[in-house]
Length: 146
Image 1 (cartoon, one colour):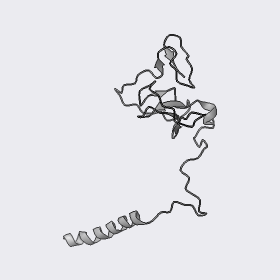
Image 2 (cartoon, rainbow, N blue to C red):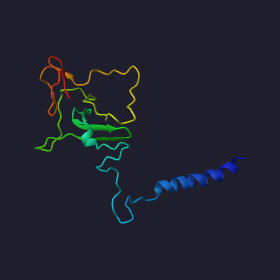
Image 3 (cartoon, rainbow, N blue to C red):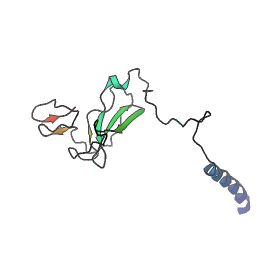
């Protein structure tokens, strides 16, 4: 009985492994590299992202900032860099994992899921005059940066 399963199992395993071992050059028919991202909005809405909203600023585990923008199915992110030096902007104004500003477009269609009971502190609430570069204070006393 075990011989009945051994031969087909070996054939299936051989095919599975051959798929792993086949070299994939990752180039198109004309020798171009594969496209993994495009600098255009391909979302279901007709409004370009640049006109729709400013991206939010997310803090990574190292305390460095990244632009983040969510259009429902599509999402965009990129390291925030100093325009003069080109170095990443890193500071400790917010703890790692914080997202400042609304990053999801108003007509995204698909909202982000937040687990129930998750700790969600007020986004962008700081002491007076502590807004990061590129953000401005919109409420006196308690600073809400947008």
